[in-house]
Image (cartoon, rainbow over all chains, first blue to last red; front, side, top):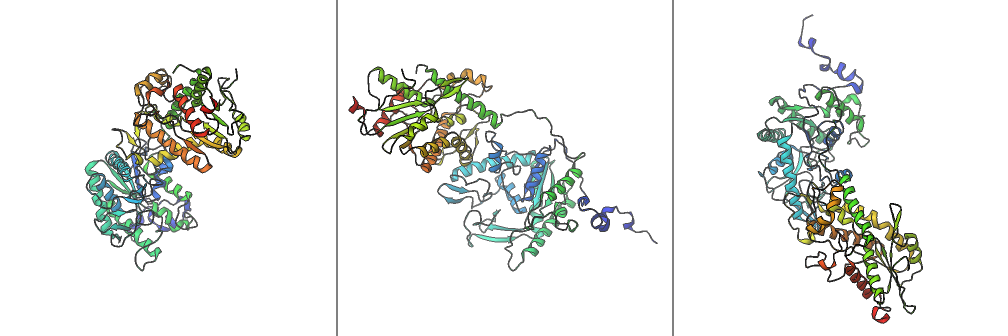
Length: 359
Length: 264
């Protein structure tokens, strides 16, 4: 019997050994992944909703989850959570498409000024079209929205310039854009704000070359401001909620969308040494788990699935799994400390008035 | 001498006024004392709620007793609540080490302070409203359910503009709290929080059928800060003259029968 290349391949190259024959919890589809992070590595996150899970795990696991826009420390953690601070590294909300990511970079550096830049829902309710759900109840005025956006984009610039690793989860290829200047919205105008106008807005479903071009442009720009930056692409396993592609079925539209994103991620990984791919998509959608990682709605990912992804991420990206939380010197007054001290002063003042000092 | 500063209304009066509350009531009680010293009439019964401080009671009437008193009042009577009121100072007196600011649409979205971080108005409003509700809402609801009387909540005095005055008052206290280097927040921030507090209180009051009473006219400067002649000697309270103006305002507004002149 002659020798052939498959004879020397590792177990992970064989479906029977690595997928069908392995216990579901032991399946590890990580192929090439050379990046290592340590507790000092600044890891930033962005992307579609699955990226929120990655952010959440990083935050809990003792690694340096880099959040340049955490919300003011006078706000208690619960309030910051409710107002979407810390959900990702900056308060940009979900970034579903490669186009959105590239335009975020351009907007942050003043290279793109979308024409449609405010959604006025009522006299005192204004939404940012590029993150319409981040501010509960909306902003009270356009001026406030613009000021908060300036602050937000400054944090985005800081993130790009100071991060060590950028984890981006690609979610969709379908998007809605302005006919005027191609500005891409995270949600179709009219869904969570704004007004849909067929004269102003049109549907665009990115092709693979389109996504690759956006990701390359983004990568090059990122390297321009941060030459040492590493990028990890993942593809969200969460299917499309709905497709706007004419005559398409949501299932085939999902397959198209995820396939394009998966190919684009791999093209960049092969092309650039600072780009990596982590197979969250395969871990959640792989047939080995027989759909067990999806909730009954077949969209949302269950905690077991997220845990599987993050266990493998830690295993491959770190030398010794989850870090022990380093004892951090406190450099800022926490909300509770400040409010307690300030509250105590007011209380003392209110009590002392009974001493009836002359006034 | 009674344990509280009160002057019962004339037996012929058809309406009664009960004023009660926390520290801001103290200045109204001071005005009552001053009137009594000069044999001037007072048409309101003014009580300070008892609070235990280091085992010692401050005030003259418990909240339970107030609830008993209001239960006997009728629709022609008035209860003026002067409870809480200084929550705005918690956020806006001591300068936070990481300066922050708000933009207020009603004030024309004035530009925020240089170097300060913007906290979106609705984000701060939701936090501050939860604190104000915690401090006031239960008491006001209980009051509303116990009496048929008209209920009025008095706003706290407007903030003082002068940072040096507040710094001098708080000098040793800042050090004691370990925040000596922070100093005092800008006056504009104090005003924004005072207004936000009033907006929150107006919302609470409108939902439970209580009126909100503004500070007396002519006690503030053109920008809305408490005018200097009415400053108490601390960061947030008015003085006895301010208390007198509040008392006059309450009497003028709510004593159609037993007014000062009628009783003089």
